[in-house]
Image (cartoon, rainbow, N blue to C red; front, side, top):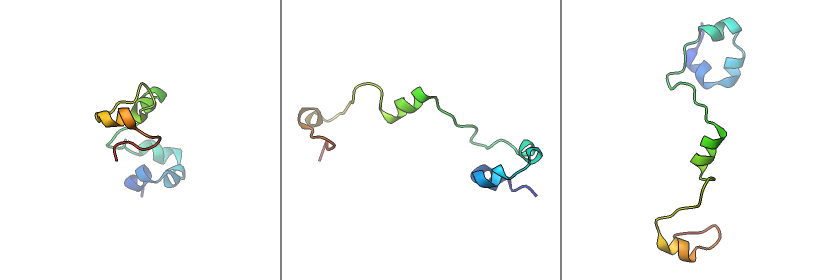
Length: 68
């Protein structure tokens, strides 16, 4: 019997399934999650200028430390 939840969560188990078993497996309820490189950069804050709401951070911030 195919353990669907285990197949969703465990890549090693899923890789050992036959092509037929994988084709019969329902889609994960959360759906396929894939982000483009641009979406990943936006989410990580690597695009654009750094923004903060604390004025003291922009005036006196030290490397790797802001807002004590």
